[in-house]
Each structure stands twice: as structure tokens, then as C-alpha cells.
Amino acid sequence: MNTKNKAKQREELLKLLIEKGGPILSEAQQLMSSMKFKSKHLKNGLKYVRKWWKDLVRPALMVLTCEALGANPEIIKPLARGLILTAAAIDIHDDIIDKTEVKGPYRRKTVLAREGQAHTLILGDALFVQGLIELSKTYHLDIPKERVDQALQVIREALIELGDAEALEQEIVGKYDTPPEKYLEIIYKKAADTEAYLKATAILAGATPQQIQQLANYGRKLGMIIILADDIEDTLNPNELKSRITKEPPPLPLLYAYQNPKHQQEIRQLIQRHDARQLTKKIKETKSIARTKKAIKSLASDLRSFPHHYLISFIGLTIEEILGK
Image (cartoon, rainbow, N blue to C red):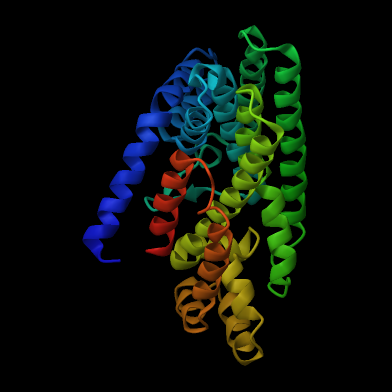
């Protein structure tokens, strides 16, 4: 894909995300603004989260799912707002676990780096509580209670599975000989949240059991694709790769590269020197990024025959964006 087409693809995807997810994200940001603190650290931290937490994918997919099922997207607004808030809480708590002080292409400081561990933890707790309150407002809608019970149970189970995945990740930090298959099992568990918010949306929309299962499978595989795309992004960015080899689980391309006995010793030496720039080059040489893209293509192939054209449009744009990197 040439540069012009890639830019157009990216623009189309962003336009779709903003159109479908933007209004709900704005509502979630307003909820953040309504949280009042006297502590300047909490005030500053919250202001920073509100500025940088642009969670468009989650609400956009939930709206697209409603449209695909012929349901009014209003039914998922409390759920979507709650999930945006709880996801923000989980993200800043993850920064504590990983000791992440800068992130993203602009190397922006995290809340942890700006406000300290204690205040970051407290702010995450507050956001999580606010998110749970929003989730409970789903009961106020004109939806049968049993459907709401079922949808929130899906979210509960996903949060537990996600926590388990985070714990399993901690067990492979610094372990470059981790079998890729084991890592992919963890990624599967981490994709529980994407499955959950599509499955919960389908339940609230009154979908058939077959449709609910289809959407659950779609969400799980899409979640894995997004995580693996982040792995590729981190591998190609020496700053992010340095963090992955020192404080976080190694990305899949590195695990694939480390499997090759021919390159193992050199990769080990580069890791020991924290030479992320040369390590990125070495991983590229081993064709491990191409192998990771092949795994993404395999997951994506199952989604292209999905019956709901709105979601097919999204997955098509997403995959082209990822594989064009």
C-alpha cells in the first residue's frame, strides 16, 4: 500500500471512529469533569487523563453492533460510558505495574510520572468506581432486567479474565524464551474485554443466541488483532521496545525471533545492553514481524465473512491499517 492510500485508509478509519464513538466519549469525559477533588495531584491527574484518554474504538464498535442488529444505540450508552471509565482506570493502574513513565510516539509523561504512585492508584480507584456506577445505570433503561443481568455478568467475567491475563503477563516479564504459543494464550485472555463489550451489546439489543455467539467470537479475535498490532508497533519503536524488554512482557515478534538458535545469542546480548535500536533491526532481519502479521491475517480471515457489513467495514479498515505498517 502506497503512502497516499495508507493516509486515506487511516483517515477513513478515524472518521468512522469519531462519527460512531465520539459523542459517547464526550459524555464520558464530562463525567470525568464532574469528579471533584481537593487534592491538586488528583485534579491534575484527572485533567491529564481526560485530555489523553481517547477511547473511541470501544464505543464505536458498540454503536456499530447496535446498528448491525437494528437496535437503538441509546441502549448501550451507560454501558459504554462505564467501560470507557473502567478502561482508563485499568490503563493507569497498568502503568504502576509496568513502572511506565513515558508512552506513545510523543513520549508523553504518564500520570504515574507526573503525580506519583499513590495518587495514580487513588485516581484509578476513583475512575473505576465511577465506571461501575455508570454500568449500573443500564438498569434505568427500558430493557428487561434479565437482559441487563446477563450483560453485566458478561462484563464481570471479562474483568476477572483480564485481571488473570495481567497476572500471567507478569510471570513472563524478562523471559524471552517464552513459547509464542503460551504468549498467544495470554493474548487470548487479554482480548476478553473486546469480546465482552460486543457480547454485552448484543444481549442488550435482544440478539439471538447465534448472533450473540458470533459477536463474541468477532470481539475476541478483533481484540487479539489489536493487541498484536500494538506488539508490532512496540517492536518498531525503539523507545517502546526498550520498555518491553526491561519492565513488560516481550512482544510476539521478539519471542518469534528468539526461537531461532542462529540469532539467539546476538539477541540476548542486545537485550542485556538494552540496545533497543539494534534489537529492532535484528528482529526485522529474522522476518518475525512478517510472521506476526501472518498471525493477524489468520485471525482476520475468519472475520471477513462476518454477516454484519458495518463491522466488516471496520475490520477491513483496521486490518489494512495494521498490515500497511
